[in-house]
Image (cartoon, rainbow, N blue to C red):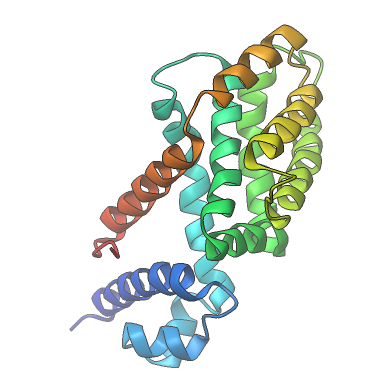
Length: 228
């Protein structure tokens, strides 16, 4: 059997296994030995394809962040407000971190590890410039990249801190959006409208729909069965 076919099949098995194990055990709790055994591949095959567990996370991060703004757009049902699209997309990320502790860990690792975080900054900066250039006409791509590093830092910090009875998810979203929409010079009246809209959404249900849609798209792309 051609080696290329073997590599493609092994990659599909590894990704399928990792999606399941990362959600069930957490990123840190998933050992390389667990992946290799469940995917039925050799250590050398795994290393040839992904090099390390971080390489699998990078593949998943690339897919998720390439698709998340388009998904948020579909969830806003065509609303053309750039600030609302940004608010829905970031609120979904923050909500997912509260729904499942292993998802929290995956997101925090993605915003922390050098290669995934650098990718997130580059990819998100492009979207931010597209969304907010009208508010900040004097800013170029470098400015948006630098602002993204700062707002991503807020995102990571807020993800890392679990909600409780004092710092509820609703309060977390409001605080986060107040700070970040201010960075991107969204006018106060529009901020108020966005916050009012977000407060009326069942953001946790939207977050679960978004995650399932992303994982189903990932499974379709790599031709494996989505874990139930």
